[in-house]
Structure formats: structure tokens, C-alpha cells
Image: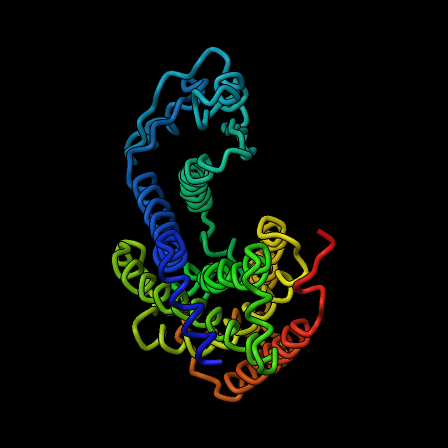
Length: 389
């Protein structure tokens, strides 16, 4: 086993493309994309919230007091286009405020005065602007409502029979956990990507090169040959995982967390704990990919199977993103889902539940060993060497 393990390692380390793709580009791709995405989103949100609001207004003469109040709040009132709807559809304007001619009449009669915010909510970048305009209008409406009540001798508090307040128990670390919700997916996909080339090359690749048959005629059990190859595949998966976590620690440390009001709990301790939790998944990925590659007749066919396997770590990650439920004990016994749950608990700064850690390691290791046993049995098939070709 050790001889096969060393042989596979040396063969792959001699291939510069494998080293570049598996140990450099693979681990760095996730942290770089994740860091750039979060930095861009934080910068764009901050700039849009702090920049002066430029607001085209149709019918400003119908509500001079409202327009004057908006200007005092720092809003830059601009001339509206001739066709506001067309300007918004063409994305020439994000938001246009229209004040109908009946605004003054309704205002003087004490009825709700109509105001229209013309926007396209399907454009994601307009959400911040729409919220800002709504916030200004709601603030102005609340001030006028209080003044009207006071003029009639009614205390404004009478309109608030219930004073509800949200007691926010979140911490900067727990809020940072929301930003790191994608982290488990990136980590697991890194493990699968790290073991992909090795699994294909040591099975379908060697069979295509006609080098597998001389290896299997050696006088030793075939499962030991498989075990050596599986150890080498797992080694590359673990190396990719370790490098990816180190890259994540450095990348997250460079994010503008102070401006975002959060704290990202991803230091060396958390990374080491994440490595421990995901390590059995490296063997799981290696065994799963080896089984699939053993059924392929060529290197290219095996690669086509690998593209489908990439969806496996996506399922639990996307499920938790779409349906964020409370972490429960049964989740710790579901391989790949348990890694997602435990990593999210780590980055939120929650106390470590060692029973869940044990269940995560045990369940994933048992499934990985079962798949490794299946992979070992496949090495006894004649079809592993002799194909219909």
C-alpha cells in the first residue's frame, strides 16, 4: 500500500498542471472569488447609502413643502424626464417620484395625499434607492401626522397603543456568520475538486494508458493496491482542503469588516476545527470519485462523470441557504449536511457541541469506509482492465 501510495504521489507531483490546478488554483479560487464578492457588495452598499440621493420629481410644484423638506435632508431634486416610465424601463433613471395634481387637494382636506414612486423592482441595484426614497417619505409623513394631532389637541402617542421594540441579541460575530454562509459550500467543493483528477487518473487514466494491468498482476491482494491509490487521492484532497482554509483565513482578514459592522470568526483555531470536521469528507469524496471513475472506459468519459458529482456537495449547502432551519441533532448524522451545519455553528461563534462533532466524524467516516470497501471490491472485476474496446 505504501509503495503504491508513494508511486501515485510522485507521478502526480511530476505533472505541473496537476500541481497548478489542484494545489494552487483550486484552493485559491474559492477564497479569491468569495473575498472579492463580499468586498464589492460591501463597498457598493456603503457608497450607495452614503452618496447624495439624486431624485427626479414629476409635479414638484404640487407639493412645494415636501420638495423643500427633501432638499433640506440633502436630497438633490432633479428635473424629471418627459416619460418617467420609459426612462425607468431604459434604466436611464433608477427611481422617479411623481406627485399628482390632486396632491394639494387631498392634503388640504386631510386625506392621504397620493405619491407615486416609479421604479423597476426586478433590477436589484435599485433596491437601495427605493428604500431610501420610501424612508424619506415615511419620515415626512410621520412628522406631519404628529403636527396635525397636536394642532387638534391630541397627543401623538395616542396613535401608538403598542410600542414594539426588537431586542437584537446578535453579536458582530453572529452577524458575520451570515456573510460566511457560503463558506461550507466552498470548502466541500474544494475537497471534491482536489480529489477529482487523482481519482480519474489512477483508475480510468491508468487503464487507458495500459499501465493498470501490470500493476494488478503483482502477487498481492488487489484491495491493497486500491487502498494505496485511495490514500494518495485522499492526501491530495486533504492538502487542497488545508491550503483552501489557510487562504480563506488570510482572505477574510483583508475584508472591510469594520465598515460592515460585523466580525468574521475565521481564525486559525476555527480553520483547524473545520479541517477536522471535513477530513472524513475527503476520504468520502475520494472513494465516491474512484467508484465512478472505475466504470468509465476512458479518461474523457470519467471526466464527464465527475461533472455530475460536483452537484453532491451543492445539495446540503443550497438547501440550508434556501431553507435556513434551526440546527438539530439528526443533522449531525447526515454526511455532508453535518459539515455544513457544524461549520456554520463555528463561524457564528456558538459553543462547540462535542456530541455533534463526534456524530459528524463517525457518520461521515463510516460512509466513507463503506464506499472505500465498495471501491476495493471493484478492483476484483475483470472489466476494470478489459473493456469492450
